[in-house]
Length: 83
Image 1 (cartoon, rainbow, N blue to C red):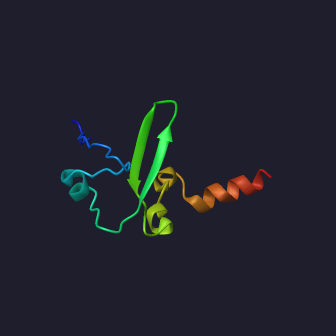
Image 2: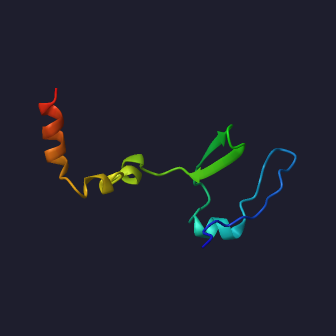
Image 3: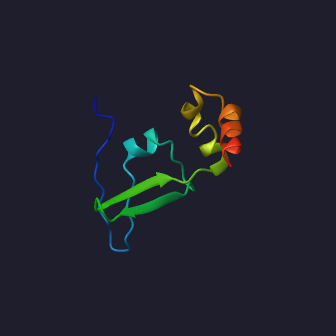
């Protein structure tokens, strides 16, 4: 199943673009929101994403699936024992 929406915009004379409405709605973008831009030289792709209002909130819980088989405090204890 395809989860990507592919639409196009035109770069105007001052290098301005309009974000298509369907993308704005799906990404919940509003006037004044900031975007982060990244260029992937290997894949020759431009990646644009909304800048989180709080990076801490955005990263909260990242990697939690790593601790399904072993509680994090057990892992840390084992690692410290190996020092």
